[in-house]
Length: 519
Image (cartoon, rainbow, N blue to C red):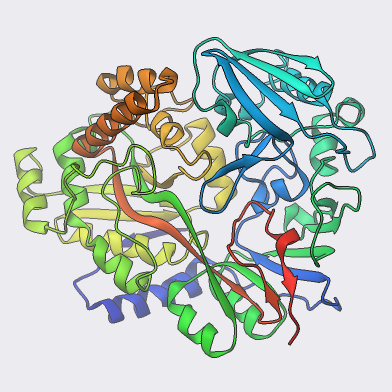
């Protein structure tokens, strides 16, 4: 479906109401939720996106928020970004290119096989299998060697110094070697064998009804929830309805303007905060002479959008405006980077300087219903850009299609697309810097002058020197207006009052921590 947007100026309340009607009635089909006869140990969850690749351990997507419910890495992050032990109990950097991990003893996979150093070596061997292109390989830095020093000690070497290796190992699920050999890639994706708190009982049609069952042998013990029944519900309004009707016990990523109403109906709201940023990527890697190749045009787009209204009215004050690719919680955040405050006059001036005083058309591909208020945000962007003469066509695409296009550079005539600077994966901005660079596997933005800075930050082991490099990168990204930055990620999640979870995280590991506190 293609929607051409060219709104006049309206007040925030009018805008929200009009855009909400479009988003609900036009973009997303209604989904019926079938009630379960579950007891309190079965948690029924509404989630916005499906696991596009199922349980495939070497995928780059997040598995629909499920992957680390049944897998573990060597390390893990808390909801606030602290790096903690997981299948590794400790690690040290013996030389600039040598890391040594001590492994947790007594861990078994869900099929009963023992986890040890050979499991880590087998996982890395498959990741770097020359006959198979595993997408996750692109996220693991420059690992070029690995061996078991003893049954519970693994040595990992890199071709160049890499300060992020312990963080990267949080993103690599450990596979069970015998099962992988027997099942192959596709079979393992359907019946993943991991060490974590749950196993996959079934996926449902097109992975839209995943069911998890407790793995009794796991080292990660559950507090109460023995079974998780998930329903993929793209429309946030339908997720809200599921909570209100008590057909869902939990719903992920709710619209901020529903929060007050949900609280009034005794639904517990827990926010997910992370250091990632919602933006529109602006495609400069292209053969035509597009206006967005000019940094003045990209700056104009940033000044033209009233981001504070997005944060205040669409997101209900639950998020902060973003002007650079790092949040204040991250190393590399640069307080000297001047914000793009809402200034349509300055935007028009920059367009005139670039030779586009009469404006020009743009086409943006956007997903909807994945993040709170995202559909309304994109409508607001189109409205504000139209006010400076940039007529913006929004093309709604499904999240699986979005992932496919992103990894294959299959954008056709699209000028920009919704994207997150996903700093929460490593709680470090390096990965998102690389994605917005010439080195990305499917590049869409490339600034050759920035590459020496990014390359140096990849290998700098001195934390003080590395922080300086990251701040310099942030300032250049800002000055070049590498993207149309919008707001920081902030997820609103709903929970029936009979359950308590504390801090939310969306990688699936939350389920084992949930407590049942009764009605």
